[in-house]
Length: 490
Image (tube, rainbow, N blue to C red; front, side, top):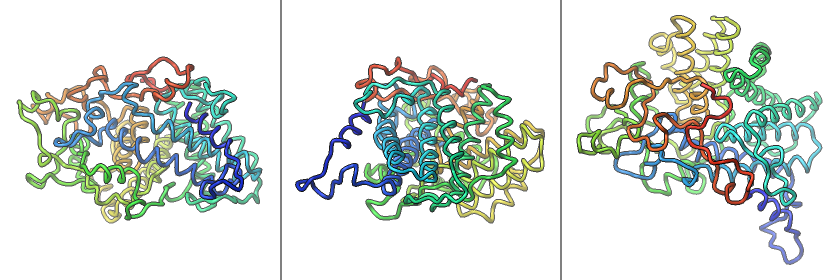
């Protein structure tokens, strides 16, 4: 497998007088210098490839009518040979996880080992959330085992959470981080808060999969009661508005010199129904009449849907890329954290007042990030108001999480939609909605008009990388995009 080859290549480089000093050996790279590379690799996966395809799967994005780069994503025309996951697979294993393994072998500092484990936990969480089964127990052994066994997602989740607990238990009160840390500035309290947020996110997935639910309910209640979470956002904020230093997703768009992304009908209609000013954030009104209009998912190439015509770029609202040059990559947003806390307070503590506080804090945090802090109070007193039954309030939490993760963390938006089934999938076809918009519930997802591999549904996971299929004979049988990850049992 690629990560095995990379590990051996690194291990075989012994610098001597003839070595190029611009390419140091593994022994010359210290843990403090290697750790940021590991974070950068996780961020590169989350904020580039996953950001892009998850944006289609959770119906933020569709393919702009007069471009063609992502037709297969819009139409769910995806299988293993599509190699949707090849870059994240390579970068996670040969980059992030290999770097973290070496960092953890080079230091005995328990604070450094703990924060490395936090990043390792999120890396494996992301791998499971994409493909469910992934190499874990036998991974990263180089030539000692170049064909590692794939572990099921539940085993991986449980394993890294146990590793995280053990790493934190070894901390001493006076431990100090020594590694270079552009993420949380060597603040051990922030790292503990980040670890607790990851636990909260992952525990909720066990609960909704009905896996030891009673135990995990007690765990999430204890986490929320302790209230030891990070402040601000956990964001990889290292980019600038300068070529060569762009946000990686924007950089890919820039280098393609093509505007591929427009916004979907479900997202635009929900934002319009709730009179949400965040609709203008990174979304352009269509040029034909200066209004916001989303494209029906997977419809651009279906001429029969458009009465033997084709939509034009001017007919839909497209993404405003001009604001994204230096966009941070979010590994965990404060808005997501607060909305998870609101869910726990409402579902498991029956504490309406505390749930409302967390809900409003989450929404306000997102408005503030988008430069709209002054609009939050108005929204929360009107369409975003905390009102109705407990079920209605829980639905509101989930829908506002979907909105708040737009242009911030699309991978988590896709995972949370799969966990909660909110936004729900409409019982109406796109054709029926087009014929009778009043019958549609704004925000409900639509089965793509052209749905080539989704078998009448949405994308539930991604196929394995062809690198794994090529180099590892222990790769499980091919999975389809309708196969679910372990925590998605609905």
